[in-house]
Image (cartoon, rainbow, N blue to C red; front, top):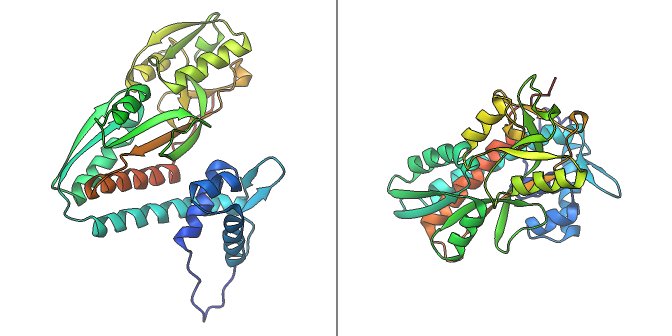
Length: 304
């Protein structure tokens, strides 16, 4: 859109951007409507308003799916960064000077990847709050949450299996990770590196291998992401990994390498129903960090 030089540029509305991001992540106007607590017709009106404002179509629509146009791909990065900045600014003023303890649960993979940034930012804006972190598998974290042992928890779960009260922070494809130039994926039975029971990535991998008829053996097992990465980098095994985890000595493998598709998973957050200001502040920092993470994903390295 080209605006006259003597007129101010129009402003983007955060509520509309939130809806835009929800559609991009779910691939559905209907699912996005539920995520932002609006009717499908209201969501359609918001997107029409946004497209009219920018003078560009943002989505390709067909009977099966909704995907971003080239202009939509450009806008999504800006939208995520604006939402992230908004969350951080609001939490800084609305819940400033809170005190107390937050009991936070996370799977190992996101504990290693996300929590350092969350805790750093949270401590900077809430210096009087202590954070007690529990790292465990998603099944155990859900049980701890239900038992009242945690205030907030992150969990990885299958798409379409979202627990009541859970908020989806990220939906991402699962792919096979292997060593650059490695041959583990050529071996029979296929050597696989997996997490312990209760991990959605493990379940997806085993179900996909069984459905495809591919023989496999569990060659390496670790509850820690660093251990999984070492097994893959050493070409001891392949492993199911989120798309954004590919890189740093791990390449993406897929159908052309004889491996079955794994689908997607959700990273969700559950916050206790009677959460006070300190817990809500920590939840907002988690949301802001995930928005930033989605806006700047790791580059996927293709297999040779």
